[in-house]
Image (cartoon, rainbow, N blue to C red; front, side, top):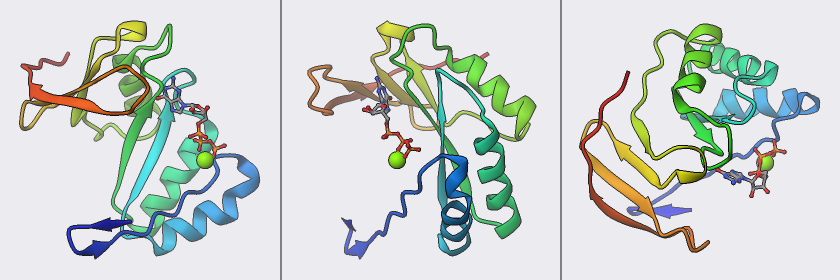
Length: 135
Ligand SMILES: Nc1nc2c(ncn2[C@@H]2O[C@H](COP(=O)(O)OP(=O)(O)OP(=O)(O)O)[C@@H](O)[C@H]2O)c(=O)[nH]1
Ligand SMILES: [Mg+2]
């Protein structure tokens, strides 16, 4: 994937336990990792084991919380789950705007820049500014 005159290689490994070898190998060679946490299920056994690989290989890693647009999801609960079961040093860098089926986008807590999805299935978004408060 080209990005600012560089090429970024994305190693997308399956989340199932059957693929621990692939997860471990990718974590070992990658410069950084994004660990997905599904908001409908929260932290799973595989989330913990993938995070352990990141710590083991000292690979810089962030969590990405997906499916916040699904019913009965709660971002703060997912963050608590991560803090209690993986790392109490994890802090949100982006906060959701709206929740559950009213999820509209995200705001960067450092810059205040927001990204509101168009909601037409195009995956496009409007940029803006949004005040944010957590906890
Ligand atoms: N509503 C909603 N659906 C999502 C979201 N993220 C992923 N999905 C859907 O969930 C399904 C699984 O998504 P994938 O991206 O294939 O999941 P994955 O993490 O790659 O799964 P594995 O590779 O099997 O571990 C697909 O149908 C996606 O369209 C999200 O944020 N919201
Ligand atoms: Mg996948």
